[in-house]
Length: 92
Image 1 (spheres, rainbow, N blue to C red):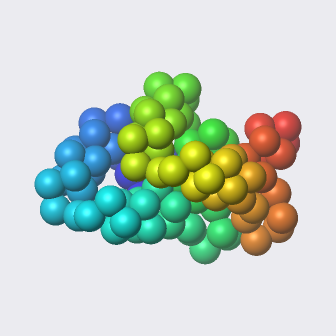
Image 2 (image 1 turned 45 degrees about the vertical axis):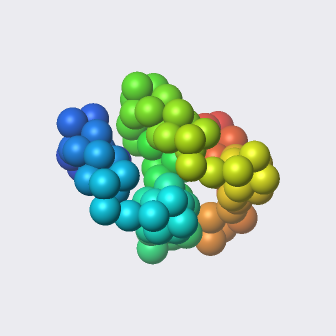
């Protein structure tokens, strides 16, 4: 994942490439909703480790690609392997 490692520029390049090469379903499953080894999606990682600019960028992209149900159930209310949501991560 570009979040946390390559910064904003790498994330933008990855998004541009994905939009050119992948379907919306592939973007959703392999980028926006893909999980790391702890069950965290990219939005969680950005909320914990990255600045607001990257988090805002991911939010905008999620609004472009995900349904309202996907945003609510997977992005905002989805849990990691410890049962934590993105909101709990913000309080740790």
